[in-house]
Image (cartoon, rainbow over all chains, first blue to last red; front, side, top):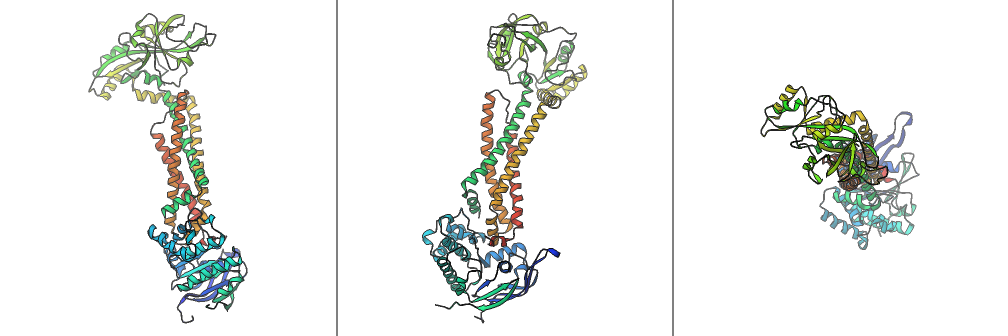
Length: 236
Length: 382
């Protein structure tokens, strides 16, 4: 894996909110490298900067200082609209609260990243259905989010994150709202799909029950990475 | 993404119906209040429209409104007839006086005297009888529309004066021989038509008695030139029907305060309507802020999000506008039947539509500021 190209490289990354006496340093000089296809888990106490770090990596928040390369681009150096388009093309998101549109069916929700990129509606729906099948929800493709269980909703969210074949997927607490068995199943699907496509995965989590899926685990505290450990995942 | 925007809009039925209802209420309020104001304004010109046979009114420059004649010399009629381009010119008398009904009810009325020879200037539409019935002994015409209210015998008769009834004007007995379809008037006093000579005999005499001269232009005559010559020869003022209606409406608006007060109610209705429309849509966008944030995180540009929200605003605005103005028109018809002032010329729905669309779009764009300013990281939080 060490010979694989770098997906993410960060040197001395800082992020400060506010100015003067009210300034808060959320990131205090992060150094990190993630190779393509790797599953990195970010763990640490609440407020240690995990979500801030993935927000900067995913190009939805500016950095304050430091060098940043994500898929060979510094997204914070792009103009706002270009950065938004770059994000839409290369990054997938899995949110803790799923963030599915309640008025849309599972398939329609999954088609959104394609529609945003300008893919025709029929083609977007066809690809969304195929992705829904891969998360084992083919029989619930036309269900509304309210008609799905939490685990099913998170699988829809995973399908939505992967439907446009992103090179990097960032996940924020993807299993925290799920029971152990469901969370494990969701991680199996997420891990299997990203591994098959050599997609890099960065997962923010508190859930030690899913550490077994990680290639590496980066422990954060007070805006710093204090330790990077090998994960426990081994190919079956 | 447009169908996604529409599904977002209509997904929560209750919220969607509430949104449309809010806009419809705003449109109803604006259109209805404005129509009532226009209705009142139009009613101020009822007498002029009921006397609308002529092209021009010749009158004293000090006349302020249609029920405020300043007496002129009778010779003015002859002067007017001598101007090139005048096809005909006839005298018109108008005066306030008092009447007494058979049951003893006393009332104030307006007597209008029409040229004895031609009866020009009479109401354009009769309900019972003919205009020429005025030539009968002591004959007068009454307004069939307003008589049930304005000519009600309150002292014991229990009914309104009607064809065949007699009453007195300054102790002179008159006989109702016919009725006409009068327009609803802003002014309360009933208008009773008689011949010019009889009208003069019914009201207390003054040195000058002529109220107006009605003038018809000859075909092809230069209206501006004729008016200038009429004013030069007589020292008086000429007004077209529309100018006279406007002068009357302006006077009522500025001097009585009634229309200004009502206009404030209209402005208030407009303001409340706009606030309801704006606030309703603003809240809707805020309710969906998390979803817009997720879309932005997934690559939706500010331009795309703006288009989606504007589409939602326009759909809701058009639907609400249609329902609101439709309800306004229907309620207006019912109000008209009940005798209330209501008039909805095309300009009212047009301005209401423009206002609703503008405010909805403004509210949408205002609420979008929050989407633009939203850090997509917010969507990471549950």
